[in-house]
Length: 253
Length: 329
Image (cartoon, rainbow over all chains, first blue to last red; front, top):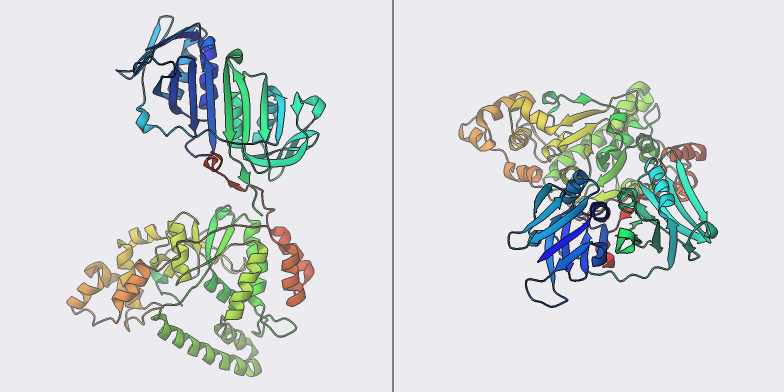
């Protein structure tokens, strides 16, 4: 049994952070909130999402398979569809109700009721393993600064270099004709681990991700040399956490 | 060389610009042969370095290939592997013809200089050194080479079918018999001399209402690199016969033709060629120092011209290869 009520714009922010990487996935509903971990179809990026029950105005969950506190319901959700519904609904409260037997999720916003059929979890990709990564460098930057650079970069090329050179963090794109570089000194950032390294990433992915993080004030970039990028940020005013993991492009010799 | 179905083919003119950005699988043997026969001095003498070694093929590779790359075309050279045993007879006839041409060239050089070039062209031959030189230069230029198991054209056609390249570049229509969906001719020819043209296999089949299998049988009737064909049957007659009887067996049954030696084997060479499935195509950055060392120091090329050619190669974008996330999970 799962019934909950949440601010529609908060839920929308959460769903948008997921759809920046995947269209659908297995959402795990438990006593303490919602969780998801999913890899995109091309196996290039992963999203980890957690939303604590405190983000909800009302949150009731009881496992149908047992009364254990650790038990969870796993439901296959088409997040793009859910986002579409939330876009229609506006800024009201959303009531959510899960019918596991019928494999339906009922949503209600004011007088608008919308029933979503759940996806068969067996048709969805297996939940990926938890990555074990060690990042030598961490940069905390204002989200808007990052997003603005990505928007400019999209006009120039299809991949972007993120790196640290001493006490400077830089983002650099080289297209056929143009070049763009953003360099920020340690004092212009919220945090920076000094070092010398860089990696190259697909702009398609980063630019999709940058849309998913638009509500967060700051983001944490975890970097290595020819290593995945992990971007961490908060959603639902700190009651939720999102991490994106993006595999690098390795430069050819 | 190759099958003589020119009469049946209606190539469409194209331009280098039109195929910009495309990956072209180039039949290396065919292209090197073109370079060796065309790139010559007015009296027919091939280009040579100060030690007398032929350099026409290297000249073609550096100047013509960089021209293609300047237009954004991405060449992959496909080298022949072991030739089919059936090719033996044809190859032998060809080398005899070449010897004959060489004799006539030597003669003509003395007596009719204007005739000499014709014979000189026909005497061009490709040996192991020429192949090695070409591979070395391509490596230095960062241009990928693929080694075929047998026929280079079969390999090139396979790569296009596989989606790893978009066109086969060859002068021979054999590429079509090997199933190349689309081929381009005159790609490496000097610009003013011949316009690049494309032939689309599907269009050829539709124009004449025949299948690729029938096209191969048709070619066998005329003669291919692997069989001499039937005397007196040209492309038009062969087309008529194939459209009426649909295959060599039926033609024999109907006593239209007598036996054709090895036709089943030749058919298999074209329809089920032996190909290298584990090839890799990677573009590198040109190693300018090595290119100059090889061309200018070893083979007396002009450093200035080589520099100009190298500058035409688009600066390799550091796109790199996208890794998958699983590697870190």
